Length: 332
Image (cartoon, rainbow, N blue to C red; front, side, top):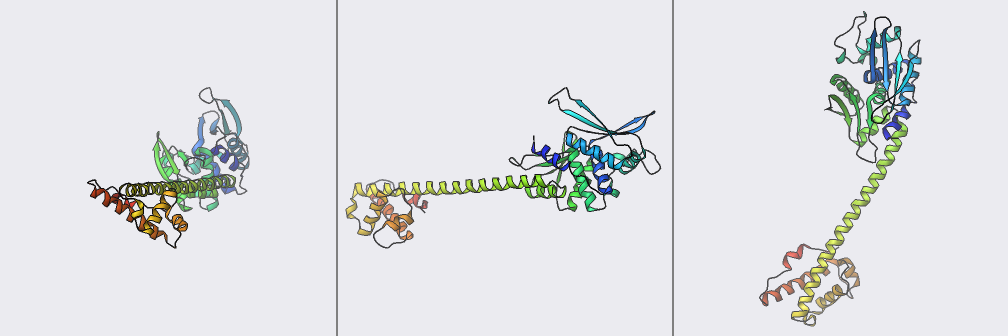
């Protein structure tokens, strides 16, 4: 089961005790998944369609709370693609349905149909913060989804109407959540990609279990990323040390070949012998291995002096110096 489905299953268990919040959530589900059926003999029927059984159960529970006659649930199986079950909750004609139509902007208070309903939004129902949260929860249940936090962070709610997506963005802005909108296959997609913003959204819609799972995965990913960054940093230092050590040993070999190490001053001879004996060590470690008291910078200075001597020997032999460009290599 996807992380998105798990989240929907969790928040489908939440049923507010406040009639206003029940109405707000039901309106969001109707706005995202609703279908209006008009029959001359039966009247106006409201249908809400979903592929999630937990969401279908919640819609049915809401109809029991909001209407005198609760919805009727039917199930059919798709014949294509994944062949998922599709659940339809049908609310038969009754006075409460007219109220829903009015809130959705389908009808005015006089019962007349509104041809501009596509641009409407039930803002008069969403005056309180609890109702705003309920509406966002219903919208996510109806047409929302989110990626598994193991991958890229992404949460979205899809709407058929730009005005609806814009109004939902305003609701999110009210809670300090700043979403973006894009057009995808003639649908308007309200989306979040920032982990902190997704956490805020999950908090406001009451998805506390999903929030904990999301945060645990974020902590795990951050820990892994920190470990990888430290590993890369350490490897870079090792490579840097190896490169510098190879250059220093090459300089010492040239000095040995062209004049002999015994011709060097004692302090340079000692450092040369240390480097040849411990090629993998950094400067600080070489300083600790030295017989005399010397600092890391002192070791660095003496090794650079050896490279300078090797370059001078090469020039005197009619060859190009090779170590001066390598002085940028350093060891830790």
